[in-house]
Image (cartoon, rainbow over all chains, first blue to last red; front, side, top):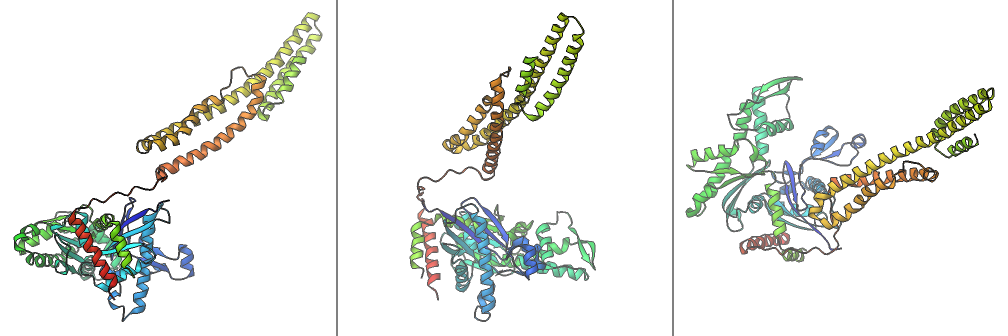
Length: 352
Length: 205
């Protein structure tokens, strides 16, 4: 029987890992991996390793690990100084990737050939990208690494005169598309992203309500359920524990302030990329700013960035992709499918 | 009387529950018939003959009654199976119909046995109104057939549930035709650049 090929687009994010496949499967899993602490918890869970929301729910019985930080495998920049931690997180990242591929394969036969394009942050180092290649060994047959915002642009067919802003949990990646493969000068990576919003949000709530019992996970969930910058919506009132007693607290202002906290850095990044662009085409670029990534789902963020750009830069037109969470994985899948077989073979020949 | 006893002995071939009930009915009729005979013994000869004839007729009627009971039971069973078979056939036809639009040869092949089953189910257990001795003897065989048919229907329903859950996939019997990727020069250039980047990445120390 002829061998079938399964094409995948993968986005290994700090908060969520997303996969899109040409067998129609499209899914994501929270980038958490849990290992039972002892024999009792192993028996309770019935598994050696737990992923995603299940790991978060049972975190008290698990050693909970998050293998990615700022879009890359943790400790990949400190592989020499912390080799054991780096190896540990590499192994955890492999488990997560294997789980993600398992979700995608479903009913496909085991002998199917797997090809994938994986997105990496815009300015990920060579070491970061090599780490990503290493974790795919034995899991994916043919793999390529590409810049995540470029994958978004490719998937949307915006290969020129567009500025992609991919807002994740660990990084915000900006990429200027000018009809050629983007170089380092066309890309910026900011480290104040979704996780930074959570930190700001938590500190603002604690500053106002000193006795409130809150964790980062709780704050993240509150943000994802209620995030908005717009002042036209209803007030956000939630029950938070204060000395063990659930107490209704209005967190609207704290939430708005936290969500707005990443806007100045994003606008500064846009300004840098537009200013260094060919002046004849700067107008086209500044009126074609596209938001993608999970962070772009914050209500009113596109309008806020547009407003900030108009105030500080005198110009701006911002829109958001239809499926912000899947934009990167969709773009990776399209790249994978479009890549001619001879290019894959060429890469295989050159692989040591 | 002899004719009535013959009828009773035939009843012995029928299902146990019906037989017991029929037996009770028969017993009642015989008792009444027999009682009538005894009473009639005190009467004139003509009256005796009339009573005997009446009692024999009563027993024969008992036999016919038992036959009717069994026939009814058989008809009910046949009705249940027929309606189940028709429902399965209809569902299978409905399930196969949208699939048929996509892979009609496969769908037709899949639906055909269901359709045939639905058609034949109704015909298999048509019982004639007047149950003859042969029909009664065949009833037991048909009951066994009903049970195996119920098993088959159950398995088919499981298959339909699986088809509805996973969809119908045609088996790959020929090598898949590779679509030639029609890419613009611009796109090819992008892809070539990505390949070169990845080659450098793999070659890097």
